Amino acid sequence: MTTALLWFRRDLRLADNPALQAALAHAEQLIPVYIHAPEEEAPWEPGAASRWWLHHSLDALDRRLRAAGSRLIIRLGPSLPALRRLIADTEATHVYWNRLYEPAVIQRDNQIKQALRADGSVCGSFNAALLFEPWAVKTGQGQPYKVFTPFWKACQTQLTALTPDASPEVLPPLPYDLSSIPLLALKLLPRIGWDEGFYRVWQVGEIAAQQRLQDFLAVIDDYATQRDRPDLPHTSRLSPHLHFGEVSPRQIVHAVQIHLAHDASAGGVKGAETYLRELGWREFGHHLLYHFPTTAETPLNPRFADFPWRRDYGESLHAWQRGRTGYPLVDAGLRELWQTGWMHNRVRMIVASLLTKNLRIPWQEGARWFWDTLVDADLANNTLGWQWVAGCGADAAPYFRIFNPMRQGERFDPEGNYVRRWVPELASLPDRYRQQPWEAPASLLNDCGVKLGDEYPYPIVNFQTSRAEALAAYERIK
Image 1 (tube, rainbow, N blue to C red):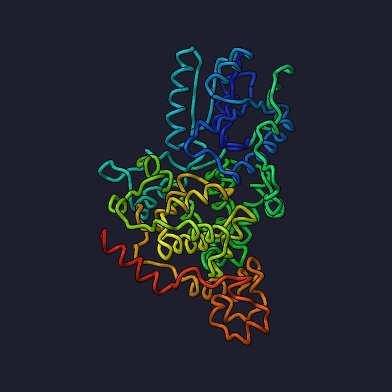
Image 2 (cartoon, rainbow, N blue to C red; image 1 turned 90 degrees about the horizontal axis):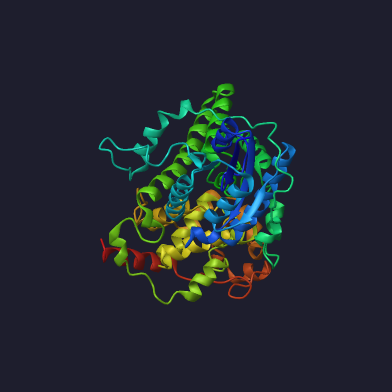
């Protein structure tokens, strides 16, 4: 009997899983395995919020496998010795997995593939995480793209050819005596219960991802006009499901195309096109990290290596992390992040702008905080987003574009509901003062029970003064 190992990583689903399809095509017996080796992803081991999600995603995958007649085998790393032990235990001749694209993992996987092939194993790796391989999309000169719009135009011509595979209903049973360590032994869940809010917000796993996709399709017609409103539920929130591979981008594109076939209205087309463009940004992030692997730590634009960042920013960074900057929209976003492991994309840009421009704290500090606190922490997209806002990445926002959190709040949280939810100290203020409570008369603050400088801080920095200082700093490298 031919036996294949199916090495799960961040492809924690059964549908549209090319490594699974290859294993079923070439072997009579299938061994699904997850190997826990976070140190092999150094220096970007999964953060605390990602570990929380990973625990529940592995549990959901195991339940899916058991419903199909199999189960998940969990082993501890290092990965190569663990795979070799499994090959010896099961007499497996084939090993299949789906590719990841972070620099450290690419190097590891190449070494593992060479070693296993030298041992005599048949190895195969596949693309399950992206619409297109990072090396497959090139400029007319055969170079990687650094500008998003032409990159996405090159991708769009191939979108119609994407058809996802269905989930197998039945899988071959495993040898009953094959050992697996308990999921809890991985110690992915926190010892201190800071994750209570996560359970109120998230359902994890492949089935939950499909349900969230269907829920989003019900409102996608409004996506183009409402996606920047953090107070409204008009974003997909599929990013953590995508990162852990509980749903594939091909499945999402296919579902959107089916939706469009039934709704060809102007709003439906615009909403779908706008959302698919956001998927394109995800692809672009992986394209950039693959071709410029040092950008997770260093700016793509080399001029910013000499940018005069502040040096004594410890207290300011801590205030920003805890949502105590005195700018309500910024604080709302950072508190949402702390309590739920997620932040609305528009708000991510605003909080990042305040950190890198007004506080002049290096973007790497913000990237590390997001890495530890986001359930959708993705190295490629985290890097892309922070370098974009800081003005030092590919196709970046101009450095002089400095988000005004008060104006952004008035525009995208017009009734103040987002701030009211996450900054309850200001809930009783009239709407006109909720984005800038320091402008309210002292008598009104007293009547509303708002104590600035005590329960809620004054702004950590003057916006206009810090904006001028940021632009002056930019002139030194311009």
